[in-house]
Image 1 (tube, rainbow, N blue to C red):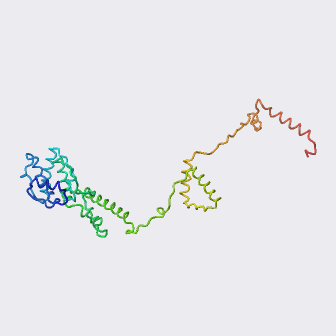
Image 2: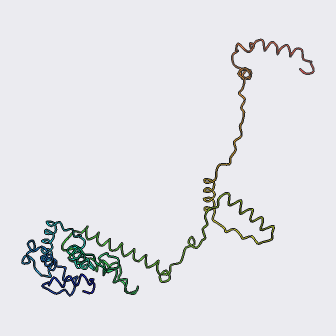
Image 3: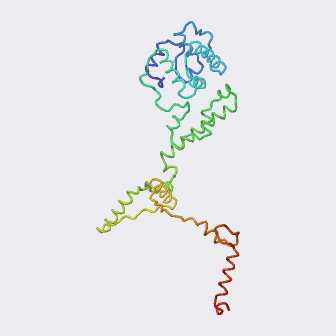
Length: 301
């Protein structure tokens, strides 16, 4: 009873239940005490002779099936996860169910919740209280958190595999958190990329300011800090980012292209047929012969 708040503990004592509550997880798993609590508020709907205070799985399933029918008839919304966790005696499930019934039946708010940690219905809280070398492995976590009663009530292989995969996934997440919290224990060394100092790319205006500042420092005789070497891939990436950010400074020169005259084009092609613009080919040959006759004989020889 130490895991329940004081207000809830006093409320359970005022109901004058048939059996005393020594272990919340074990005593509420069969649903008998839950039915007795509701019998005080709904005496006409709950008949206690229909419920059995037993420890076997068939008796638990029978009691909770009657309670589920009553919840549906009275429109009482109780999360199915709390009911399933209470039946299979999952950690923190019964405590949360009792606190939920207290707020639902008395319309009061609990001043202080006893469960101030992450609620996942596993033994993660207990494992975190142990030293690192004594904590359970992944296979042991599956064996501890998957109850045999779950396999008996839902004998489905796919459902069982999904439960085991969920527990293993949570175990991997907790293992990664442990590595981040204590990297020295796991001999985790930072990579070269993590050790490198990354600076944001410089803007075009800032580069000019830095050049002016470096030239002024050189004139004054102050030492100039060496620029840190960056890999070629990062350098080209930063240059491309700067070019994309900076406005385009390319000036285009206008080139005037003169189109070839139609008459000159036809003159260049002498082997083609004559046109109305050019003289006929025969006259051109006669003129060339006359020029050849008039040339000096020395040149012709």
